Length: 79
Image 1: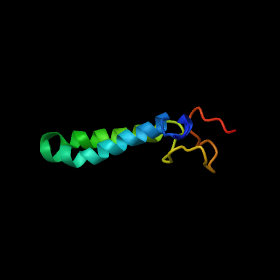
Image 2: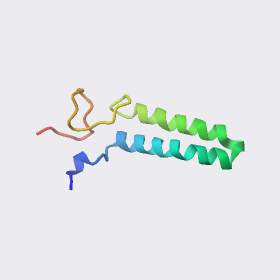
Image 3: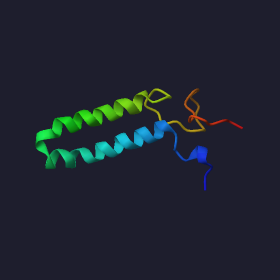
Image 4: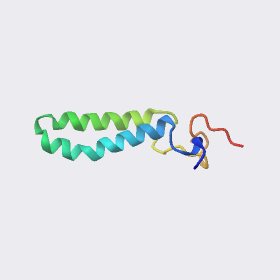
């Protein structure tokens, strides 16, 4: 099993995963509840905005072997 620092449990990865799950559920929610479909779209947009603003700010998922400075997971210490 990979060490905990490599498992994607940092806040940025969790926020991206939640936003992606909501994006996947959006067509089903909009189909079955057409009255609130725009609210669901706004909710998905909001979750993606939160995912973009969680540090490190940007669209890339942090990982320990990155070439981009500052894109390492929170709490990761290079050996």
